[in-house]
Length: 180
Image (cartoon, helix red, strand yellow):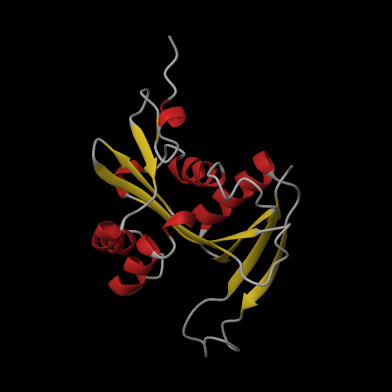
C-alpha cells in the first residue's frame, strides 16, 4: 500500500522516511519564525512584526517545515508585482533552516513543496537576492537552476555604496527561469 498524504491534505506534505511536514505558516508561528531567522546568520533579521505579516498576509507563498513537531525551516516568498499574470515570478525573500536540520536538503525541499501548491504551479521563474559571501544560498539556487530551471542570470540589485551607504554588502539578483 502506498500512502499519499498530499491527496487528502494538499497543504501538508509528509514523508514517513524522515518525518518532515511542509505547511503554510499561521500567524501564531510568527515568533518562532523570528527566532529561527535570528539563529541563521548571515540572514538579515526582520522585526517580529514583519514575520507576523509573512505568516499571515503572505502565508500562501511561504512554507514552514517541521520535524517531530519542531520548527526546522521557513521560506518566505511572494509573487512579484508588476509581472505579466501569464508569467508569474516567485521572489524568494529568505530561506532559514535550523542549525539542527542543515545538511539534509531541507531548503531545496521547502522550495519544491512551495512550487507544487495550487496558485504557484504556473510560476515561470524564481528570483532571489544573495550577498557574494552567502555560499549556502548560492549552492541552493544553483541547484534549483540545475535541477528545475534553465540557465539564470545574475545582476547587481542593491549596491553596497549606492544603496546601502557602505553599511551592507551588495545584494545580487539571481533570476532563474523554470523549466515547463
